[in-house]
Every structure is written in C-alpha cells, then in structure tokens.
Image (cartoon, rainbow, N blue to C red; front, side, top):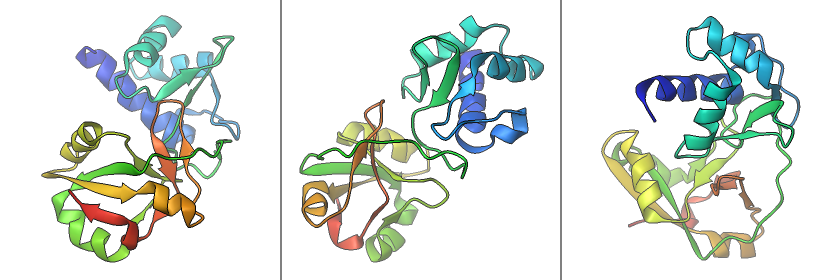
Length: 181
C-alpha cells in the first residue's frame, strides 16, 4: 500500500475498532458502520475521496483487518475491537496444537508470570505461524515470539475463535500454557 493508503488504514482501524464516536459513527453490535458515513468521515480528514479509496484499503490491507458487507454498503473491522458497543458473533473453532503470540521482549517477565490478557481489547490475538507473530512483535519493539499450547487449553475448557482474517482469538492465556521460543 502507498503511504496515503497506510494513513487511511490506520484511521479506519481507529474508528472501526476503538473510537467510532470520534468520527461521528454508530457501530452496530457486529461492528458494522455505513460505508457512506465512513467515507465522509475519512474525506473530512483528507484521507479518502470515495468509497473506492476505502475499498482499495480493504482489499489490499496485508492484515485483512476490514470487511465489506455482501451488498457493499457497510464496513467493519473483523477483530481487534476495544469498543464496548461491539461484541462480534464469533463461532468457536478448534485450534491447532500450537499458536504464536508476538510481543516486545520487555513484556516477557510479566507474561511468563501472569499470562496473556486482552487488556482493552476483547480478545488476545494469536497467529497460526511464527513469522506473523514475529512481525507483530516488531511493531512493539525488540520482538519476542511465544508459543501457546492452544490444543491443551481447548481440552481444558478455553474457547477459541478464528476471525475472518485468520487471527485466532481467546479471552486470556494463563501462564502455564505459554513458553518462549
């Protein structure tokens, strides 16, 4: 994506995941907003001129963070919400034996002691592969990748979900299921 699309993508993440009210948006319980309202909000900030601009970001975002409704009239973030107004309907999914979590190495002592918690978001985000987790970790500083014993967690009653973009979601990961790589 070019730098203008990256700026638009970051704005969409902010308004569709965390602060819809900052753009005058109303999200429904599934996180959907009217595409026309999102385009107008982005245009007011000089970030988009059309629904095609937003559609291009949806299509080319390497993290596949956004989705358009089948009729093309609504848009939402597919995971990563912190807004209490949104509670996505997610179907439980059986995870693979291992999943991975990327973080900054400075977070390792607390994670190893306390586990992984969602913080302000609704879920902890996990990756199916180590390379994706490493990329996530790089965004936060010196990267560290943790292995999560996902199948063992599921056997012990923890519920996993898989977002539309392939990100694995769980409410929390207790420390006994986490180990460094």
